[in-house]
Image (cartoon, helix red, strand yellow):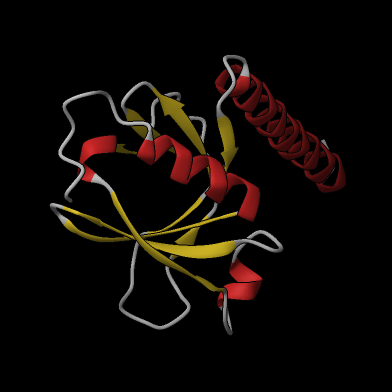
Length: 146
C-alpha cells in the first residue's frame, strides 16, 4: 500500500477519535446537567504565578456540597467537592490581566475560605447571586457567627 494511503488512514482514525471524544464530552455535560443546579465555574488550582492556574469547569449543587467538574475530561465524578459549612465567602473582584483570557467572558473572581485555606473561584454575576443564596440557606442549627 502506498504511503499516501497510510497517511489518509491515520488521518481518518485521528479525526474519528477527536469527533468521538467531542461527542462524549457533550453527552457527559448533558448527564451532569440533567438534574439541574449546574453552572459555569472556574477554579484556580495553582496560585504560584499571578493570573495563572485557572481551569474551566462546571459547578453543581448537590445537597450540602458544591461539586466541581473539569470541562475537558470524561471523568464522571467531581474533581473537587466543597462542603457548604466549610465555605465562607470573602469577597469578589474583576478578572485582571491574563485572567481575562483564561476565564469565561464577564466572570468575576471570588475568594472563599475553607479549613484547608483560600479557594478562588470564577463565575458569572448571576451564578454568584445563587452561590451566595446557597451559602446563606444553611440548615437550622448552623453557626451563623462564622
